[in-house]
Amino acid sequence: MLPQEIKHLIQRYKDKPLESVVFKKFPENVDVPLLLQQLEGRRFIANKMPSWNTFIDELVFPSHLAFQQASSEQTARYKASLLQIESLVDLTGGMGIDSYFFSQRVKKLVYIEQQSNLCSIASHNFNVLGAQNIDVINTQAEVYSNTMPMVDCVYIDPARRNITGAKVVLLEDCSPNVEAILPHILTKTRYVLLKLSPMFDIEMAVRSLPNIKEIHIVAVDNDCKELLVVLDVLHSLPSCTYHCINIAENNQNQQHSYTNELVQGVHIHYTSQLSTYVYEPNVTILKAGCFSSIATAFCVEKLHPNSHLFTSNQLHIDFPGRIFEVIEVVEFNKIAIKTLLTPIKKANVTVRNFPLRVDEFRKKTQLKEGGDTYIFATTVANNKKVCIICRKINQK
Image (cartoon, rainbow, N blue to C red; front, top):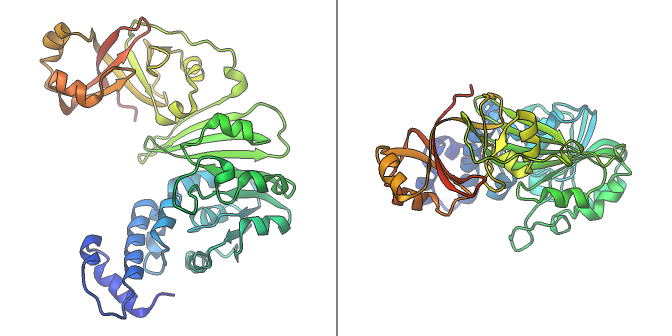
């Protein structure tokens, strides 16, 4: 699919820094943007798609924008594991990463993409990867959804940028317009799996979408990546199950699940007294805001409504976040800074519900970054500002 000359140049420069290739002079007949596109694609695959590395010399890569919008292998595998189905339509095919991993779980998959060049690239790559159960169709999602046959699941990952390139938030501003096409799609499938931006408001999704059965907040190494919504036409109850999943490179995945019914009316107990351990929820818990569920599930107390830190005398090694053993707690004042913090030369500092930023705190305390000591500068239930000096617990 690539010109032979481009293939030769790829082999020559594949291990060179991309910046050195950008400023190099090539003969006029060399498609330099295409060369750079392929070199950048190889780096993307090496970092985010390790299972494709075996085929890297045969794969063709699209533009930089397609990389930005593509799933990583970790999140694509997770999505593909969610439903036990036989057929799926991917209405927003793009680079084809999600389609490929879905195809490993279903008998039949239809890939829909409105850009013809992406269709050509995806078709080529599917053949290279041996995914023979994927039909590639070059059309708009709106057009195909009007005439598509019955299918077990429809997957939609709408583009979240408008024609000017600006990010959009509302579902009706995405492409395709999910709210416009969804009613008809729900007559042709049982499940709809919708991928939204991690910045999307969860409560807005609950209010605006029908038949929500599950919501998955997905992070990789504590970096929130995707918000997944599973619609099931047979699910008409107001109850919804939330899954907070943090995928870690060391396979120490953290997961917490709960239903909206279980947390209704649950009251959190706040405390000003630190116990033996401090618990810092991971980013998926913070995104979900499921603090009452966490407090109930792990029997922990919250330090303050806005501090989002918990404490307990009991060690809960499977807590979805980081765990610290408390060494000392001091009020944040001049005396404490001079007598207790001065001997500490460096520490890892986190501020939560505190009047100073991390850089301001470091300047005030003269603390350097790093070391084995951790300090949480925060506010507790009686509104006192404190510094929690602690050490990190290994959760492996």
